[in-house]
Amino acid sequence: MKLSSDINVKNKKAYFEYHILDKYIAGISLLGTEIKSIRAGKVNINDSFCSFLNDGLYIRNMHISEYSHGSFYNHEARRDRKLLLTNKELKKLLVKGEEKGFTIIPLRMFISDRGFAKLEIALAQGKKDFDKRETIKERENKRELARVMKR
Image (cartoon, rainbow, N blue to C red; front, side, top):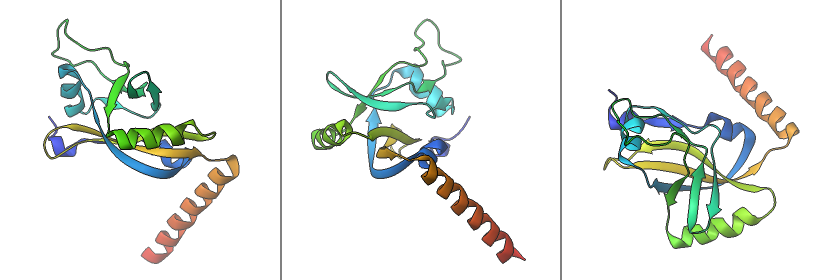
C-alpha cells in the first residue's frame, strides 16, 4: 500500500492542451470508499473537467475505481464530486469561466499533510494547433540540449 504522501496524480495532457492562467487548491467532498481508493492510487483525472451546477463547482468525469474491499456501500466510479473553495474564489472562477475560450481543468490530485484529498485546478485557455506545435518544438529542443550537455 502506498503512503499518503506518495499520491500525486497528474493530468499531463493539461499543460499540452491549455495555457494555464490561474491555479487554485480545492478540497473535494468524497465518500468513505472513494478516499480509500484514492489512497490506493486508483484515480484518473485525464478526461475530467470542472463546471458550475446549481450550488457550486463540481468536477465531472473523474474516475475513481471502486474500492476492492467495499460491499454494497461502494461508490459510483464517475459521479460528480463537489469542490470546496472559498466564496471569493468561486465568484472569480464563475466570472472568468463564463468568458468565451476559458475553462476550468484539474491539474493534479494529491493527499495533504493532514490526510485530506486535494485537487489543484486551473483556469485555462485552450491552445491552438500552432501553439501545440511550438510546445513540441520547445520540448524537443530541451531534450537535444540536455543530450549535448551530457557528452
